[in-house]
Image (tube, rainbow, N blue to C red; front, side):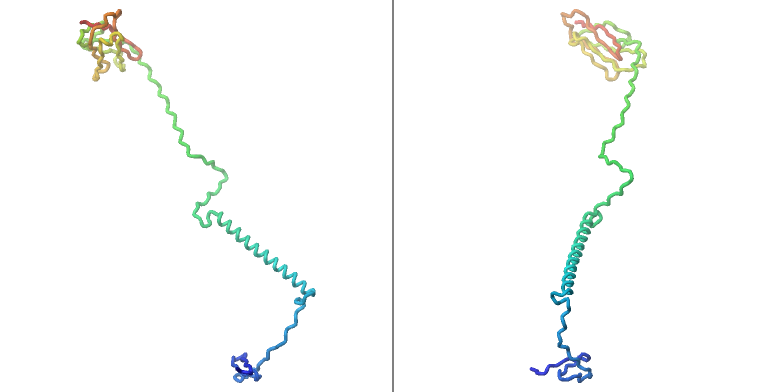
Length: 227
């Protein structure tokens, strides 16, 4: 263990004995370190005015520092909140349309109102001059006809003027429905065949009629059954 301490040259860095005053390598003079303790400043001495001012300044510096930290934290919170509420901040939400000066009322989808269909004008009822029940093979008006049981008779309704067309409705009195049957001709309009299937009731007091009706006009003919 060395008794004499060594020092390092402040210029060339060479180590030499502390007894030397200069560096043996570069000749730089060694500067002895001061061993004096610096005197305390007035602000470090308790009870002085400088000490009190120093404490006051320290407290204000701490208060100002705390206020500054709180302001920074508040600013960060506001920025984060604004960013989360902004539609364009980190989201794919569509941008809100710009508001126009005039507001357009939003309405739910409503089915379009169907256009009113005009009511067709009814055709005038044709004016029939003559409606007659006639024999099919003679083209002769018939008002009273006798049919034997098991036989049939072709008839048709003649309408004048001849250019008037319409489906003639045929019917037989209820008293003769069990004795006569009407068969319409599918190939000729308003042509029928009346078939006698049985005798008329014995207690029948009046005649049995067959009727042809079209456009409110009616023609009739008496039906008789012969055994």
